[in-house]
Amino acid sequence: MEINNEYKVPNLEKGIAIIELLTGNKEGLTLQESKAETEISQTSAYRILNTLVRLGYLFYDDENKRYRLTRRILTMGFRTVGEHGLLEAVLPNLRELRNRVKETVFFGVLGDRKGIFIEQAEGLYDFKFLLSPGKEFELHCSAPGKAILAFLPDGMRNDYIANMEFTKFTDRTITDPELFLQELEKVRQSGCAIDAEEQLTGVACVGAPIFNYTSQPCGAIWVSGPTGRFGGDVIEQVVPELLAVTHKISSIMGYIRE
Image (cartoon, rainbow, N blue to C red; front, top):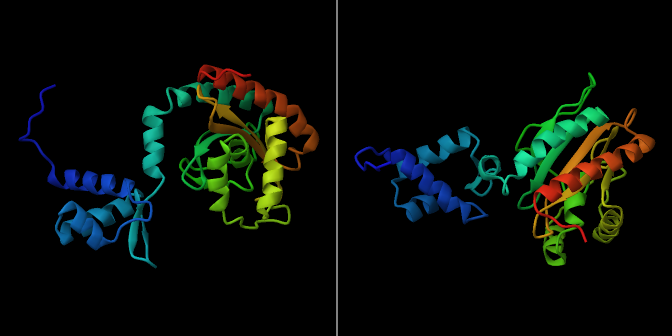
């Protein structure tokens, strides 16, 4: 297709320029910094920034007056290109696992400092847990967070842990970095991670990582349910089903188990 330079949308080009600028600034930018870097007038920059905030693509921090990208951009990009077809490999297997275990099955990936929920297959019970795509999840008290971190290279894992706040949500939440490392070692030995009411009382989860062709975790699948029907014995029955699915997807992604 021939590109016709007569048909331009200046404000769209300016908005994209601001988004591209923000991708290289994790701490965000002020209005004045955005204006100076992009050479856009202050009025246009202000309107574009606030439009992007209203649409959910940017977050504005009142305390330091900075604009930052939200995870919505990442979610959109992941849905578009995935990791060599990761989402396409995941979706039918989410539904297959859901049909076996009847609880909601989720898929998520690792973000800058937290996990990012991508997709789910709704449970078959009337009462079930659901998440909104793009929602972040904590790493220190979630099954998918622990499942991914346990298999990261040491340096990368330590970087994530060094930046964790270890917020206490329940009496079961692990808040000590050393105890958390011990927990991750257990995950490495078993191949899966359990959230036993560590973030929400009455909710249990079990998760396992998905590996790519470089043998690195590229996401996780987890099952969540109320402890009244998703307790220890049931979780033990779900684990083989979960691992069978994650191993299958990992194989599709080119991972070769040692």
